[in-house]
Length: 171
Length: 241
Image (cartoon, rainbow over all chains, first blue to last red; front, top):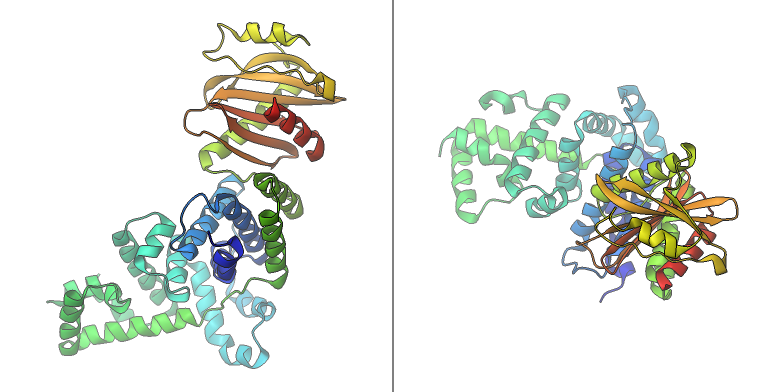
């Protein structure tokens, strides 16, 4: 059996990024990932992990869901003027930050305004590069649902960013 | 292939999730159709935009903490105890009473366990049968439950059994055994468990320590305001009995 460290820890960044987008909060994301790690350690070895990343992401998501059901929903209003401001803490180098600030802030704000179902599917696909099948495993939905949800998520995001309104013409 | 079908499959096409034949059909149409070509382009632009969103790398402090836990876990003989201890540490550290358990179902039970514990203390309804004699407590449950809870007295190590009562968890009657440690009360809920053979978990909820384990077809929930070390002592003694 491969060790936990070798199997799961390489995906810690992916887990954190996912948790960060789910929660939209750095502290909350840290808590989720920590708890998910503990949970993963407990379950590790009890099953085969052919796809440790998807497996770990599933645990991250379930951990987040469990916490979310137990706690009052954090309705953190995302103000557009917050987006650029918060970015300073996120460790991009200054040049990069300056260059990307405007576009990144807009995308980030738009993503954060999406319903979490849409946001997570976009993050898993576009940022983490998971396949439909892997996303389906993480979200526990059929591949067809992944496809339609992703499609609707992109439509919504495009509308928010005002990219190509003609996407909507057929729908 | 018409535009409607292509739009239907556009995302799967861009994500390379279509099989070769379907992808070829879409590609053939897109080459011919200006509108669909624009659709593909705007989807690709959108993808680039999303990928330009911040990537949140796990903070070094988090990586360190997790690595430390992982090392402890692999080097320790009592793996689940380590994990349980880690949960407690994390729960305390994050300021949130949090129990790491398998499912929402179990999680609901945890809340009920804590509720019952609190209720038993507040309403003064700690016992239906008050006795330090396990030979009195055990028969009392006969006829009230369809199973016979193990009643163990741990008085010699400082956890006297002081009584029992009927309680309810998840809509079914369970045995609640009451133990005492100095001024602290421990409620031990016992019920049959068919689904699992053995497992264990621990954590805090609303300031109470909760330990859960399954053994020999019985699920146990120990809850108390006792500190973690002493409750763990109780749990170990109970598991060893």
